[in-house]
Amino acid sequence: MLDKRPYEPLDVGTLPRRLAAAPGLAHRIGPAEHWRVREVGDGNLNLVFIVEGQLGAVIAKQALPYARCVGDSWPLSLERSYFEYHALVRLGQRDPGRLPQVHVFDQEQALIVMDYLTPHVILRKSLMAGDVLPLLDRQMGQYLARTLFRGSDFAMETAHRKRDLALFAGNVELCGISEDLIFTDPFCVSPRNRVTPGLEEDAAALRADRALKLAAAALKRKFATCAETLLHGDFHSGSVMVTAQDSRVIDPEFAFYGPMGFDIGAFLGNLLMAYFAKAGHDAEDHARAAYEDWILQLVEGVWSAFEAEFARLWRTERTGMLGLAELFEDGGDAEGAEAALAALLRDIWRDTLGFAGIEMHRRILGLAHIPEFETIADLTLRATCERRALAMGRRLMLQPDTFSDPRHVSRLARSVRTV
Ligand code: SR1
Ligand code: MG
Image 1 (cartoon, rainbow, N blue to C red):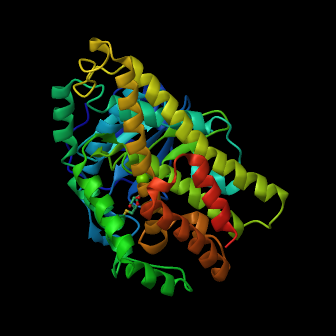
Image 2 (spheres, rainbow, N blue to C red; image 1 turned 180 degrees about the vertical axis):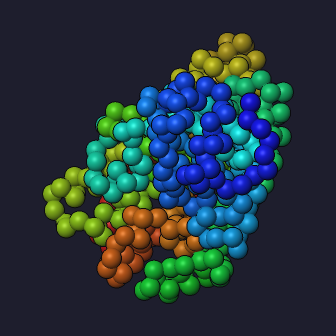
């Protein structure tokens, strides 16, 4: 049992002393006197350490009492670690093996010790490097279907789901970050916003675009009021680690009960931005065109795998209060259940497109930009790539009903890229 010493930000010197008392850790990675510790965090919020011993390694992630990317002028409570721990456990149960296993949760220190994933790399980096990941679409589509379906009232026992809903309703602070940074700031003047030089007029035009602001308002309302399932809550390509054969999901500290399309949309929006950024890095040649095509196939493949797995779960695990077999199968109307599934998938697809579009706006107009664009050294070229992404994102937000399936998304991406 770890003692309840008051919280202190740990460092490579103090972390081993703290962890030496953790039950089972020496057994897993070897005796503490041989541990080597490195701090490797490059995310927006937390400290991340790799602790290597003679037998293996673990990751130790500690929340800081402020947002790391901004500094102590943006205080944040340590509670996010509690929500991340509970989300890691639940999402891991819903898609076994897809998230790191937790070995120690030290609530006092806001510290989670979990599997060190190796030789995995962050998906965002892998996409920037031009890696082809043949299983990613299936693994991520299935992950999304399993976690979103199994965390909802289609599958869960309703008293259990409501208890969980109450627990994650406490993640007020991180939901607040999303509410501000995704749905509000990008569409108004805010000191937290930043745009690439050359994109100022585009940003001003979007902030004066009433149709776009109405779409952002509707998406924010959906995000805040549609407590459909337990979401990862920040499911971008920095929250996935990959090898050619394996994909793992990390960092669900933004977890809360929200609309299914939010996680799917965040992921697809980030894939689309990876697509639009390619022209800022590589010469226009056959290799680049082939990789861009692969990214669009990935977008299509994630949705297809999601749809197929969601339909399978609908037919085999619809045991929750919203399952409503009483209305359909029990009364001999199996086709009614299929019609309900089709209607639900249409709704999720529509939400997915809107959330993908708003994610693309917030990464270009807001506080938290992405390395795919930020590393384009030529600012004019960077602005061009971002402008194309914004044009695509705007269509997704304003006209989701014009995309009947993901091939239409690919078609639009290709035509916008040549603008
Ligand atoms: C202050 S946190 C900024 C962003 O980083 C996280 O990864 C989330 O995406 C958040 O919006
Ligand atoms: Mg994160």
